[in-house]
Length: 375
Ligand SMILES: [Zn+2]
Image (cartoon, rainbow, N blue to C red; front, side, top):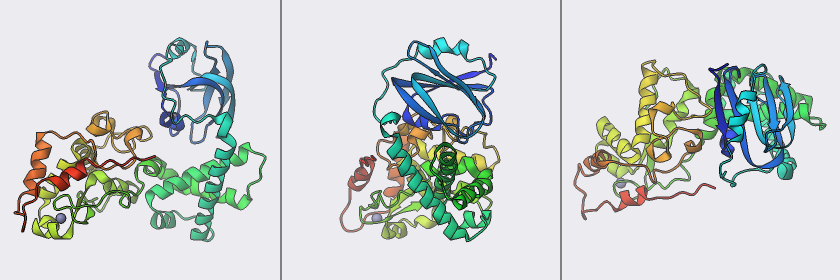
């Protein structure tokens, strides 16, 4: 009992994932801390059997049930929600949980009582259209080989979420969903089951970004393209390849500069450019790449840290964090660079003379300062 871990879930991302993909809840107690008292809808989809307890702001127990099926759970107006193993004694944690009432960020907090219906219908419409795509692609029985070949990993992540949502919704609502859609959703979850962790990580962290990022060549500023640096070994399963498509593994460079620097034949220069541009974010990816190659990859919590294990980096975007909050693709703005990173950038960029006029570092600076506000 005393080797149990208490986790606080305070940001909206943390809450959104909750206990999903925990194997069991025997050693974990999750505490969801909210800024206000509101009726809330929880779901247990992808979660192990668990006990859900809802508390008022002064610690009164308003709801206490063991939920062993994947479904929506409607909770009364409450301030704290605790999730733990079916047999766990949560009482010893209540005092600690109640002591946490920080100034919580209000942005991004969805008030379920106000928007649940329209949110549900938007999700439902999306889920059904995903399932339709599956039907049109597979024409009959769902096969893993087709799923793995025809869809990008991040799309497969969104499809399993949709399938799960559809089944759950079907259980919880009075609306009838066509039985063919329900069957398809079941089959999808069944064939994707071995890959769920990576698929869900990719649905957030593996989404395409090349179209949204500036593509000015980091050496000369003319239009270029983002060139990946590390390559997956032939034995890397397709479910893991999305990490090689991350921006941290790419540099923007034009065809002309690629030729001038003889970049394709100079692997160490490629590494210099990526390392200099992305700092510890490239280092963390590199560590993941090496660890996988040498079969030393630790088991890690991919829901909380989709990109790479926590110990591979610092705790912030700037210092290489692979946590969920830092998982959406972003340009290299604000990445922390030491002298060693700037040296390696200059070593590569100035290794060949510029023709005609001598350029400064303006293009590089423009890239390093680029800001992309993602809503
Ligand atoms: Zn160029």
